[in-house]
Amino acid sequence: MTDEHTKDMTDSAAPADAPESMESFAELLEKSSRQTERLSPGQRVKADVVSISGDLVYIDLGGKSEGVIDSAELTDKDGNLTVKSGDTIEAFFVAVQNGVRKMTTLVGGYSAISLNAIRDAFEAGVPVNGDVRREVKGGFEVTVGGVRCFCPFSQIDLKGGREGGIYLGSTFPFKVIEFGENGKNVIVSRRAVLDRERQDKLEVLKTSLSVGMEIPATVVSLQKFGAFVDIGGVEGLVPVSELAWERVGKPADVLTVGQKITVKIISLDWEKNRLTLSLKAMQPDPWTSVAERYIVDSRIPGTITRLTAFGAFVRLEPGIEGLIHISNLGAGRRINHPKEVVEAGQVVEAYVLGVDPVSRKISLSLQPKVEPKKIVLPNVGELLDGVVDKVMPFGIFVKMKSGLSGLVPNAETGTPAGTDLKKIFPSGMAVQTVVTEVDTASSKIRLSLKALQDKTAQAEYDEYVESAKKVERSTGGFGSLGDILKARMEEKNQST
Image: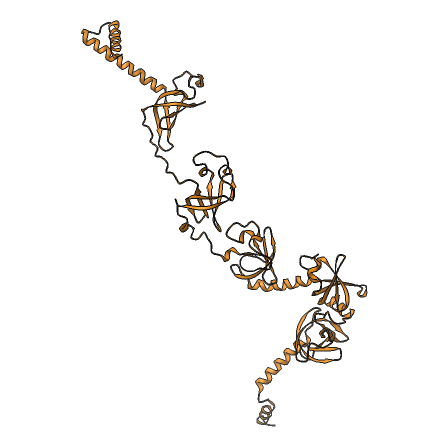
């Protein structure tokens, strides 16, 4: 056989559509792989109905593999099948029985389901549909296809429920959590199904949610600390501080259960499954333009909201509060508490002293701002009149006519050490002092009584010397001491 003949035979054996044949082989390989794939009990699959025979519905599991479902699960109240060949359904793998892959859907509550079907669901961990018939001791009686089961109060919902009226007459999916005494003791749980659904939804949300997103939500419960909302099967918390820009007493003042709202995500903690949301973030921040609305020295109305030891808070608008400090409440007089002047709920008109949008603070006053008087300090050496204000261990405080106070240290009182100054200088006593020191930075003034005495003595001495000189000029000599004194006395008599 020649090489050319061999080549012709090879060409004739190859299909004309070789690429398509290779693709078909890949498809067959994939189907074969699916056929040999092992299913785990409880695993959910989506498959097409291939045929219906007697009490069984056959579904395609890939390749030549099929699963069977009891047709009773897919029958309505009137006994009619709800599926037909070609329909796509979801089912759960139960087990291999007699070489056949047994599948199940959510077990229907209207059909005469056998205990075997419930046992299969228990072993596979798949849910069953049950009707909540009545409330019994410790929980509810639930019927699954005519089989009586028991659901404890703690297992009827995520948070438990003792209000039977909410659940009676309803049909829910349940998980069989106990199958004992050959079906005489069947315990089911709706909470287990809800937990699984919530976890599945949470896994989806983990990949789609991020801080800053705005999402729709439904209010499900109101607590003192905030509102729980549902964001698609998962609950998040809107803290009371995030309900509004203004202070909220209780969440019920802002929201109602069942209300539809839009919130912003401000924090995500997937380790603890905590979602913190904000409702006020969906509203404009009133502090953004606060400086434009509240001008310094302007007069504005407001309502006293609360009193503290240091002042009174005033509500100016939703989300905006100002503070009247206690020093700006007494109209110049000293008060011990704001309640002496105002009370919560009182409407007042206040003057704006200052606005700080960054710190979110507005300072207010019941009186207009008064410019402080310019302090005029005395000069060193100046002679001042005043009265004794108080006596301290270190000296005497003297209040002057200008309103300023000065200190006469002990050493400047002109009294011997150990003297009881309170006896010599009683409060209110008029005194004359000399300014010895002035601190312009702190406005502190130091005075002296001793310096005044020294100054007086010096003046008298100077006057004595001048008198002596006059006598000397009139007598042509120094004269006697008697002459000088005589002359001095005559001058005094003339002056009086």
